[in-house]
Structure formats: structure tokens, C-alpha cells
Image 1 (cartoon, one colour):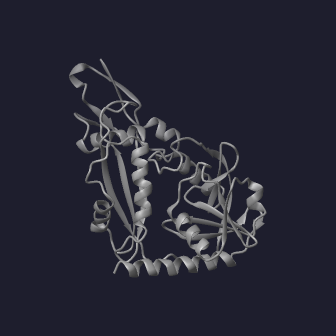
Image 2: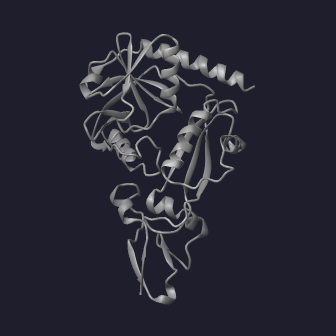
Length: 314
């Protein structure tokens, strides 16, 4: 007899599959059926090849990804994404092929992308082994989703957010990497929806401000711009990097600060940034109402920078 494990019950328990999704945690089979699998109630003689290739991504979340935005057929901020992606590959111990270069992937992304799009580059470890892999070479997948706009758009209504109650972000050597195991962010996004919020602010294990379910955080007091300290567990945001550099060039003082909830509640403005949405302003956090004048100014600064980057590549 041979024990074959099939993904399902844990995912359902965590709420990621609909309630009527047929799952099977473990089945016992005689030796003549040892290669059979049960996929969503369907018995198969062998595991589909495409699923075998995805084994370590599905079983262990053993990989990372980048979410990139294309504007008018260009990826103007690709270099920052590549820096984060290639650093993550090294930290996770992948044996990176020599042809995996910034130019190789920029061409691969543009090749299949609509002119304006959300692009996801996913990489994971080749199949083999259990927690300890037997092959550290990576595989990759590029997917795209068309976007209507060719610019970052400013949302005039603002966001209503709250402090996340159920999740805390860990701090370790893997912090800052966009790993495939996004279970904490999924849970945080589901909490925001259940509470009628646009997003929730995630604290780390020390109760300090880290990020939201999909964005980095920036806040203002007077003429000073604050961001969380670099080592608070947050994803190292490309758009936040761009914006901070732009603001410093414009003469703004930008400070990193270990921050608690009280720092956000006492701010004049609270902004969220990510590579797809650009800058979004928070209208309300747990009863505190914010302004947005400087946020709009920052958004215009970013828009002009985007236009100049696109003009450089023509």
C-alpha cells in the first residue's frame, strides 16, 4: 500500500476554495495503482505533466513573483522589478540560468503583453524532493491582464481602511521578497472585505506598521514625509522607491521611521503605493479623517515622471 497526498482539505479550511469544492486529503491505493491521483473528484492514472512541473509551487509555495505594469507597450520601471526579482532568486537559493537576464525577461514580458496591462512574472523551483529540493533550477510563467488606462489614475474618493486584527507580518531573512506563499495577504484582503473596508494596514510581530494587503505605506506630518523603517517585514515596493527618490529631488524631507498605529492616526495625510495603482490616498482610518492635497501633488509628480520615462524609450 502506498499513501498519496492530494491538496484540498487545508485550502478549504483556510477558505480559498468554494464550499462545494470536492476535496480528498489522503487515499490508500494498492501497488498496482500507486501512480493514480484524485484531482477534484476525478481519478487519473497519472498526475498531469503540467501539474508535475508546478509541484513545488503548489505543494510548498517554493518561488516568487513580480507584478509589473505596462504603459503603451513599454515597461518603464522594469529595472527596479528586475533588481528585486533577481535578488529574491539568489536569496531563495535558485541556480539561475545564464540567459535569465534583465533584457531576456523584459523582451519576454513585452512579447505577450497588451499595450496597457498588468503583467505577472512567476518563478518556482523545478520538481523533486519534499521540503528539501533535489533540483534548484527555476521555471517561469508570464501572464497578463489588459488594463484600460495608460496612466496612473488618481481616485478622488479616497480609501477607507482599518488596522488588521488577524494577521501579523514576520521579520526574517525572507522579508521583502514577493514569495508565492501569499496566504497572509489573502487573509488580510478577506478581512478587509468582511469588515467593509477597502484595505487593512498590517502590523508586524512587534506591533509596528509594516504595509497593507497590497501596498506600501507613506504618511505626512507637516512638510515631512515618513515611511516605515526598511526592516519592518514589508515588501520592498518599487513604486515607493521611485516616489521617495522623486520627492527628495524636489526638496522634500523623507524619513524612515519605526512607526506604531498612533503615528498614522496623528498624520495629516496617509498614502498607499503600488506598481499597478500608483498612489492612492486614504480618506479614513478607524475614525481619523485625512487630507489629500499633498498626495495629489505627489500623484502629478509621478505622472510627469512616467511621461518622461516613456519618452526616453521611444
